[in-house]
Length: 401
Image 1 (tube, rainbow, N blue to C red):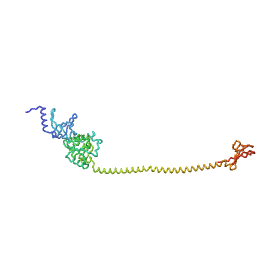
Image 2 (image 1 turned 90 degrees about the vertical axis):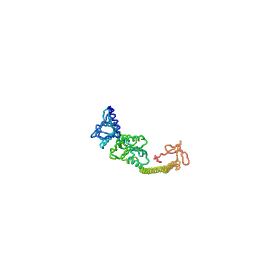
Image 3 (image 1 turned 45 degrees about the vertical axis):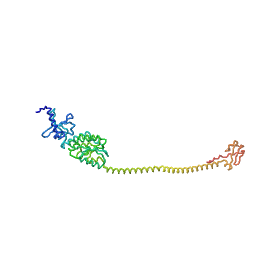
Image 4 (image 1 turned 135 degrees about the horizontal axis):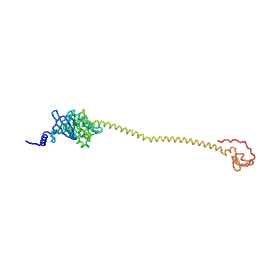
C-alpha cells in the first residue's frame, strides 16, 4: 500500500482530475451565491443547486459578464484541490449567464456602465464613406447572413473588394474570435474604408457574443468606421450601440454600405442635365451682358454727337444774335456820333467861334466889345471884331441823350 504525504496526496488527486476532464469540456450549471471580488483581482463565489454546492475561483479579467447572487450561470473550468487550505473548488476559465431573466438583468447593468463611460455617445460616431472601395467583413462563412450580404452588395455595386474574417458567431469561443478579427482588421486600417460585422437572428443566449464587454470595447476602439448588422429587431445588442452605424439585417447592412449603382447613374444623369442647363444659361447671360457692354460706346458716341450738334446750333444762333445786337448798337452810336460831328453842324449854317488863344467861345460872357474872335464855317475860316454884345435870357440846356 502506498503512503502519501498530504501535499503529495493533493497533487495526485489534482493530477487525476486534470487527466479526467478537459477544461474546455467541463461545464457546471447552478445558481450563484456569496459572490465577492478580493483585492480587485480575485473572484470567488459558490455555485449551488438544491442538493449541492461547489466553490468557484477565477481572476476578475476572466469574468466577462456581470454576475450577482441569485443568477443562474454555467461555469467552464477544471476541478482542483488547493493544498494550502485543503479546499475543493472549480477553477473557472469562463462564466456564461443562463436564463433570459438573468441575461437581461446582466445586460442592463453592463449597458448602464458602458453608457456612463461614453461608449455609446452619439457625438463620437463617424459617417460611413459614400463610395467605399475595400470592406473588412466579419462573419461566419457558413452563415446565411454572409451569403445575403455579399449577394445584395454585388447586386447594388459590383467590383468592391471584400476581405472575409471568418469567426464563430455564437457559443464558446465566439467573443474571442470576434475580438481577434476586429484587432487583425485594424492592423490594416489604412486599406479598409469600412468594417462590417453581421450575423442572422437568434435568441438572446445565441446573441450573447455580441453583448460581450470586450467585444463592445473592441468595436468602440476600431480605427475603421464600423457598421453592425444583426438579424433581429426586438433588442439592440451592445456592439450595435457602440458601432458608428447599425443595420437591422445583413441585407439592410449591404444596402447601407453602398448606394445602388442604378440610382447613382440616374441621379448623375439628372445632375449632368441640370449642370448643362445652368452652364448654357450662364453663357447666354454673359453673352447678353457682353453685347450690351459692346454697344455702350456706340450709344455714348451717338449721344455725345447729338449734344455737340445741339451745342453748336445753340452757339451759332446765340452768336449771331449777339453780333446782330452789337452791330445795331454800333450803328446807333455811329449815327449819334455823326449827328454830333461839328462838321455836320457847320453844314446846317452854324459857325465855331474861338478867342485869341484859340479856345472855343461858348458864352457871350467870354468876349467883350472890341475883342477879336476867330470863326470857322463849313468851307473856311476868318476873324472878326466884336462891335456890340447883347445878353439874352438864359436858356435851359437841351439834352442830347
